[in-house]
Image 1 (cartoon, rainbow, N blue to C red):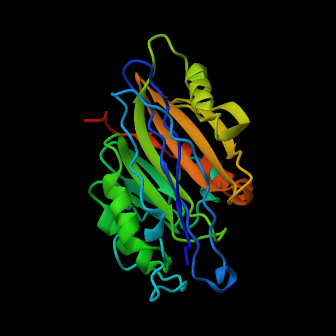
Image 2 (image 1 turned 120 degrees about the vertical axis):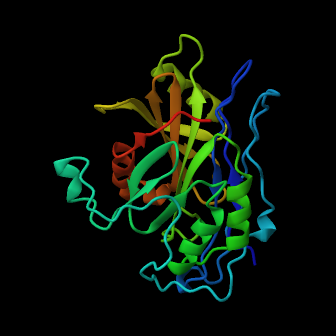
Length: 281
């Protein structure tokens, strides 16, 4: 029985030289009682035609995505140190944010750091894939861990951070965040950049909202979109395009459409705690 599938998101097309690679959507059903007997439907997405300089996102055979029978949904206190550098002290990015961040932990990779809810595990997908999978297991997630590890390791070079929520709400979709870097076209504003993202995704996604996000550190534009397809489980993606000098850090958060309203405040807060530490190598 197929219990979860991957839906490949489109990439940001760069006409002559550079492409914004969009994340891979990890879609699957858990083995919890509420999902027993359910089959996750395929969500068709059209792959954009990318120039030779594009950095493609790898695809994974959907038949590989079956839950491990031995996995349970008993959420455990982690004894394994999650990927990245986790700071145990209380997060205090702002006075108003602290009360909403109880149980959050701080993750750091070479390029960026941010706070995430305690149910997430995260790190560099290229070097920390095994650690991410180990932490998901300890938190009781019921996923096909071999496929997740392969997908993380196969992510393209411009992905510097990947976080996966061990708690699965909608039984068809896993919630995750990915951070990758990109560059503006010459003379392109952040609003233009966000509009370019919308245009590239418009074949499969409809625009829900586009706006600027106030930040004392960075120029940030936000785009919220939802799948157009009437088959499969509706998904929503929120892009936070964060400009730091000449580099754009794309924070992509993906979840089921029926979960986005509840999860969006946490996504917003995660991005509010984002700090750029170093330029990409």
